[in-house]
Image 1 (cartoon, rainbow, N blue to C red):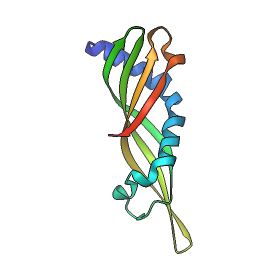
Image 2 (tube, rainbow, N blue to C red):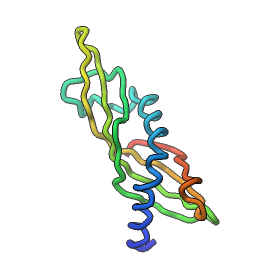
Image 3 (cartoon, rainbow, N blue to C red):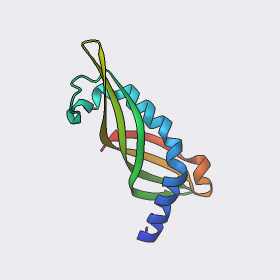
Length: 123
């Protein structure tokens, strides 16, 4: 794809589709936080007892391919995750940043309604 087409496609993804991915990414973070090494970048928290996705933004769209009437692509997102730990009966809360790759697909003729996150992995 040309640079202009890629930029236009990223704008569509950023404006309309990433909201649809928020719930899936949020569930992924909550279900997998023990394996994400979130305390590595933390300043105060040593053992993460809970993690919640608070925000994310599009960094880049890569590997855009067309298979018949379907687009397959990957989206790199930068996320902010709130992590928690109880220390001596006090609840410590801190935010950390991380990047993920979302493997996505959508039908060409109905990108918005057919958008699907097929897998999520750490970047």
